[in-house]
Image (cartoon, rainbow over all chains, first blue to last red; front, top):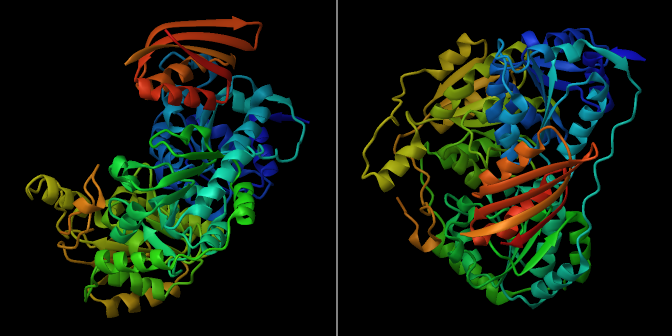
Length: 550
Length: 78
């Protein structure tokens, strides 16, 4: 059948079972929006307040729902506004397809209104970017984009379509959804070496990253850890790879993580690193990271092997196949001496609890009132570290956070996308700094009555940077004091949401329970002390022994 | 720092050169010479001489291999 480029986009979205897209209209994407408005494919469009918000919504939709997130924007500023969202998804390997309009072919290269070279601009922040000059190649390119976004190490792929190509027509033949490209089969040699190292180990530790979440292998991680008596630590992206209350779970390690997790890794004789890229935030000084251990690295991406740290065994390929082999070839073991040593480390390195309306008690109170399958988003800053450390995640993939790119303002969109893809009320923990970056998306949640509970950890400033000022600038403050001057609860009410301002745990519990009864968004402004910090902290490029206690 | 010769065989696309040079730049390699030959319509052969961190030589080859249009990549010392 003869279709326009815009109609072809909708046909391919339907082939891919896309039910929701996020975006913002504009001149050079008008033809696609016109077709979208008349579509009979059941594709729902969520109009956001800003393209950045749309890109984070698509990201959250993808992470929480395990689908490819789709975002649509116009040329020029529409594209530049998408950039941060694409970079965020790229850093955390999130499958997304961005569809952008661009100036008609005849105007390309003339510096016309809202013109920008989208493909080259987005090259550094996407897995791949396409510019479609010929409508006859549009269906193939879109199908390829979806396949690429979800294959191997996932990532965002952009398809830029000139406005006249959206309006041009060609013959279209329906096809089913393209299969995801098969993953590499892990070689038996390294798997056998890995099994041998784990079998010989007396002090084994697993270090899990986002690859465990993406590959849905948390159950296999737990089964193997239980089988060989290994403790399990996470990078930020790996948080929720094992239930937080499991006796073998050490929680997040790294700069702002649990110090006991970092110390246990230092004492390990084998570290099995699964889907983790040894980011500086996770390892600190790499020479001091697991100095007594042989390292086994399992990753889907061949280019991650040996990039930052040279492992003794490199395994590349399908995680499920790797775990199948290891579960068969690793012996049942217990390590009573290692258990005693870990207990001693936990005693020596664990944080002491505080009383009152402090971040840990706030997070634990919310945690206790929330079902385990609730998607929990964060923004970036101290609150992000508090959530990663103190929220007891019970289900893999329920934390949505910008780990690699560290995007303040990520969470509002992500929590909207997560609520839509799971059909559950999502939670956003944010700070007063991060919330201000994209709070306009509260209006999106109000418009569509999307159930999101926003908890603003309001300490009147940029706490993470204040902490760094204390550590590295002799406590001098500059541009980090926001000063509690905005009442976020009243602002939420002005945007059409429900708002609460709370000063203690009792008020928080009442407000949170009231939020559960609402259909749309609720903002709870939690007034906490400006003296709350994310200590202890391992300074950059140092080890747990150099930690600052605060 | 060391000088290396990188040889690539790839599927030609309009932006292949941009992708290759961007990857080299991102990984801290400085291009000294770049030769791009398009054979038939689809195939491109690329010969690059670049200066970069000796420790990252293996890494740049892996990263170039990751680009979906690259079919084969090899490296020689100069």
